[in-house]
Length: 422
Ligand code: ASP
Ligand code: MG
Image (cartoon, rainbow, N blue to C red):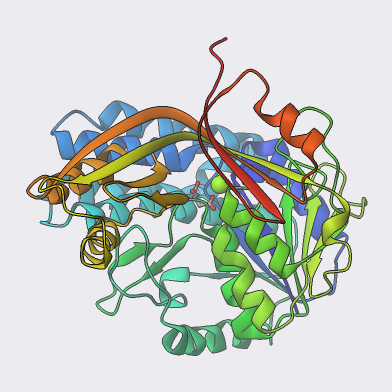
């Protein structure tokens, strides 16, 4: 049994959905769990709907646009039969509308998950309808009944025991079906409330299911030819990494390589399940494979740029040294606010961290810090990382940039820089 994951870009319009079907057609007769994300930029649109609801602003126009987007795709996929095939999607829209009309709960993150989880429900309903119409022997599964989590909304942790029982239900569907369509990104807590695994979490869903079902391998179908040594958005002349180790992939993902969700590798490594990254545009091309062997890791330098970074310096008000007690407290605040540190450095009176700029979390952190600490911060920075670098590489990397902070060890060098204004 295999696990495939199709992200938002691979189902962004009717042609893309048809392409998914043509890829699945090449694997006729195989048992495949097909994890699907929300279509195109639907998750962003749902986040906006959620934000408007929180602010007490109008959501109806945004919802209408979102519904039209799905309707258009359905019309292109099903022609005259679209209305019939859209029943499920429209029922989901009604359900979502109803929830939006409810009074808000006391937990904003729980409300977020309740709304944003619909993206994957819409997409899988449509993709399932389409594959069925095309004659695939395909079952549908609701990830909220399979992926069980705690109630850390927006960033839920998997309950592996309960999810294992969920996976048994999936397995049973293979007795009668070849394919199972399931949502990425979403799950539910012990009370049955919908949860999400963090943005871009569908890759992680694929890995969780592969782990629980002892899959032969996982393929993430992307709009790039495989895992590249740098993001073409930031760097010219990228090279495809044909084969890298789990360890290297975890490091790259940690430093911000955006090809796969950072949590994806661990479950696969733990069961030695290879992960293929392949192009949905050229499905016959070999792509990249991430597996145990690390002999090739050092051959090609990798470059990573994390944009939209903030460098925060935290300074105790009473001029005390930043020692273990302060650090414990600061880490506790970071954990409470769910802020991840990308790089840190401390001096006697100063603890500096490089983090994503997320206003919601950041303001919560500042509120916690205020009573005892002063702080300074710089925003709109980039965090640049090079793995297996040469001195030549470094020169290129920081050319014309103001470096605010630098850290290096033998494999990795990192710079917090102010990008050049264009
Ligand atoms: N739809 C979710 C997101 O856009 C999950 C995913 O695509 O992996 O973040
Ligand atoms: Mg996505």
